[in-house]
Amino acid sequence: MCETSAINRRNRKGCLSEEFYRWSDEPFEEMDSTIAVQQFIQQTIRRDPSNIDEILSAPEGQEEGGWKYEHLRQFCLELNRLAVKLQTECSAQTCTQMTATEQWIFLCAAHKTPKECPAIDYTRHTLDGAACLLNSNKYFPSRVTIKESSVAKLGSVCRRVYRIFSHAFFHHKTLFDEFENQMFLCKRFTAFVIKYNLMSKDNLIVPIVGLDTTAATGETEA
Image (cartoon, rainbow, N blue to C red):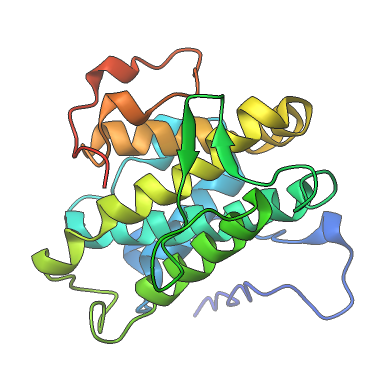
């Protein structure tokens, strides 16, 4: 009888960064876990972060609400990397407001009454707020089945975190380009909100080569 050795998909303590995730892909139907969707999304991103269509294509039978929820969680995780990079040149002194061009000034919703914040504080507050909502047992008690009333909250999160991209693009272009050329995160996020109508085209102000942002028909600003 032939025995097959199990693949241990875990980064060993002390391994080098170039040795991370050095294991074969696992088919989605064999992922026996409540976080299988997250694992599948991350696995597809690692394979080729520039293949947006493949990353956003849900496995057969996957519930749409859960698919959108897990993608938004992943976007927030990766946006933390952009936030860390922004800290090298975006400060309360250099960027006193959360702006994107001279036409857009955003108020921070993390305060009792929404008010202006330095851009880097707005970024931190927004990602912290998104994490609190997406990990809320009240709105998302399960990562397998998502209530429609909870799915409806995802659009608001998308609009707020998108402002991080827009500030970085218009005010820290060199840093943005360096990050985007490696991660393709803004392009993937824009394709995601267009595909699921989560944002209005009027709010998609970062130009993305190869994407038609006029196709977006999502919710208006809030």
